[in-house]
Image (cartoon, rainbow, N blue to C red; front, side, top):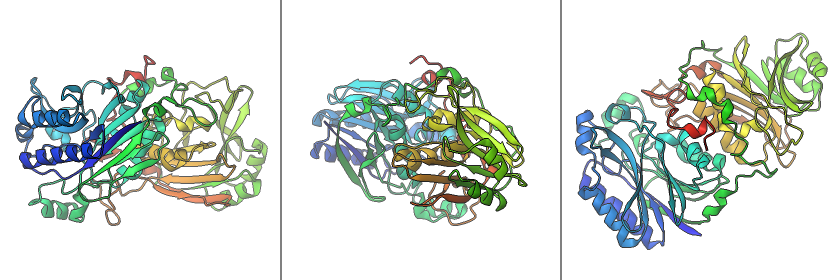
Length: 536
């Protein structure tokens, strides 16, 4: 077992005060017996500058007094320290960088942030190489920062390369970091995550009231959201700090748990990846398709013709049934008679598993499952591409069965400009629908509608709809809630057999989580060879 800690504190514009906060956190973690501590992002200065030159003046330099003090404090306590700072590089770049110091004070690794958030693009240069995986006696450590965890590529790459513990430094006001974006990276990769966020103002205090007024949000919504946490490989949060106030959270973890990538049915989450079909993920992918309808009615139902008919006649345009639903195409076609609705479900086709798109005329489309699964040993004929179906209200993708556990599948849908993804599947672990599907909607700006039976044979259906209230950079229809990209979730309750929901296809066009930060086209591509070429 290893004892790890995450520290949260405020950092302003006074470098000396910020350094003292860092050292205080290291001392507290060591006093609690931690062997490793993660500090927040931008510990040296607020991520707010007059211009690029100002940002470089305030940045640290390797070996300067600030970083030497951090290194020496790590050595004093014999503790690993991961810290996020702005760094002035000798080659003229200014980067947002994670540094890892060892228990002897040596610099063991550094990682320049590859995905910059909003105004960070004005001040910093993005990282150009993949984040390292650092071998240590505690385990194999990977480093990332804040916005890099709001999409899946950076953490996925480190997991594929063997990381057991991912260390995340955050500088975020978003309340859905702690509830979604942090724990999902643990669960989808079956790794440990130690995440440290800021508290206190994230902007200069003297300017905060004016900035908040211009944005139309309460000033306290521009504070760090705290809730620093330690997450187990199944997505369980084992320790979490409060939303406000300086704090340290500590947990004893077994890094070796991260070496087991199997689901309950024996499927290895990483071994089933198929980099040979992920080629589209390496290419630029600005949205080019026109927007879909403003809204469309959706439904999930168990496989009963009467329920399908009722949903279609009530106006549902897309209806999703569970995976391998015990119903025939002809029964579905008849249930849809006289309507324009489409039903999505799946069926075995010899050695293949097909997602079927059926309307009142019959089968309108087929999507073969792309990845193997131990649940279906008969599934040996796999598809080689994710298809897009143009419907009157927008562009639909179908994710079949256990393709739903891979973030790569939904990325393929996003780069192909899907608006809605229908998912007939069988979730076997709670994270798959509590964290996985909401994140697939959030990180790709996709509406997702799913139906299936879980490991307890309980019917579970959900609609994950894109909200028009998207970050601080769009005009909100309601009060700002502190959410960065979480979808609006409607889901079944125990014992229910159907659910109606409203999706927003047109919202899939807006992928800018902040000025200059596109959730889909802004993903790292070139450096992350392990996610696309199969070189792992």
